[in-house]
Image (cartoon, rainbow, N blue to C red):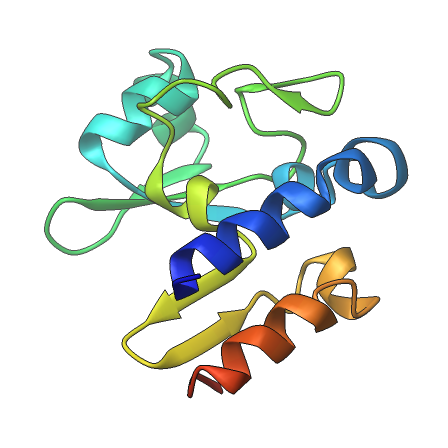
Length: 133
């Protein structure tokens, strides 16, 4: 199995944990780096309002940072309302395992990562020559 397949399997393995145990902490108390297109999808067309409140800030180029101090605008009952949508933001699709070249980055803000729930999958990736950075 290829690295992205292993990472996707790992992400799916914690879905019930994220909803029931973690209560979608990353979607309530973190931040997202989004493209302009993703901002409109995630914020439900509330870009201007969130910019005025300094919750959404433009970074360099086409990137924005959305601070999730309360909840992601796309979160309802600890579930993402755009989860199955093909337009879901890249960071949301990849969270909490990010693969870049031969490096694996695990989000330190993820409770499943802190509880070492990804060990079997990380072990598989390490056997394929990936490194944790």
